[in-house]
Picture 1 (cartoon, rainbow, N blue to C red):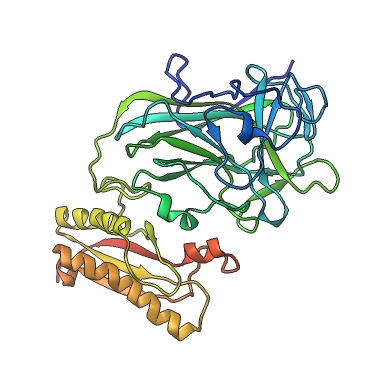
Picture 2 (cartoon, rainbow, N blue to C red):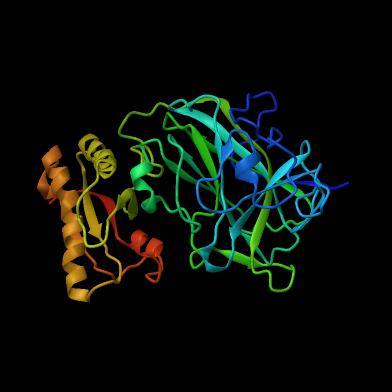
Length: 371
C-alpha cells in the first residue's frame, strides 16, 4: 500500500468544508477511456483551455495505455475513486497541458478559501518542478495554442478577479511513489468561477530538478486527483483599491523596492491600463494617510532596442505613474522618478515572457527628512 506525502501551505483542508469544485476527482465521464489525449472529450465540468491534449486515466481501461494503475507514463493507483488526470507540465518545444475546472458558485470577495489537490510525478518523467501553479478567473480561458498560457497573452480575457498563484516546494515535487497533497490559502477578489492548473512558464523560465526517469524522456508529467476549493471561516475586509495580489495598504514597507503587480507594459509603450491605475491608487491611499512619507518611482525596459532609447522609455514609464499620482492629488515634491533602461532585468531577455516581466515599474516609499 502506498503512503501519502503531505505538503500544505498555510492551512490544512477542513474535512467538513464544502468542495466548490464540480466533479473534483474526474469520476463523472461520458465513457471508459481507452486512448490518451481524451480528457477534454470525456470529463464532465472540466475543459482544456489550450490546444494541449491532457490525458484521463481510468481503472476500466483494458489496453494498458490509459489504465490504472498501469498506463503509458508509469504506475500509480488512484487516490480516490477510479480516475485521475495526467498533465505535461514541461516538455520539449514549450509544449504544455492544463485542466480547467468550474465552481458550483462564484467565490465571494474578501473570503478566505483553501485550494488543494493531490499530485504524483509519473515514473517516466526525467524532471520535477519546484512550483505548481493555478490561475483563478471569472471567465473560461480559451488559448488557441499548445504553448504556455501566459497572462500577458490572454489579458483581453482577464478581469479584476484574476489571480495567479504558486505552490512552492524548495525540494521540488519529485515523489514518484506517493500522492502528495498540496494546498494554498487565498483571499478571493470576488467573482472567480474557474481554476486552471498547470505550468504557466516557458521552458527557459521553468525551474526544474533532474530526477531518475526513462531514457530520452525529458518531460515533467504529473498525475492529478481530488481537486478541492473550500471556504474557510475567515473574512478579510478589503475595498476596491486593494485588489492587487501583492500590494495592499497594510503590507507596504518603507525603504523596500517593490514591483507593481499589474504595471507591465506592451513593447515600446508607456500607457497605463485601468488595472494599473487601480494599483497606483493603493500607493496614493498610503501617501495620503502618511503625510511624512515620499515615494520614488523606478522605470525599466527589456533589452530590445539601443541603450539610450531604452533609458528614455524607462523614464517615460516612471513618469506615467508620477503623472497619475499628481493628478490624483499627491504633492509633486513628494515624488521622484528614475529610469534605468534595461540595466536591471528581473528575468531573461531571451523570451517574450521574460521581456514582459522586465518592462515594469517599481516603487520605494521613504520617510521625509526634516530640513
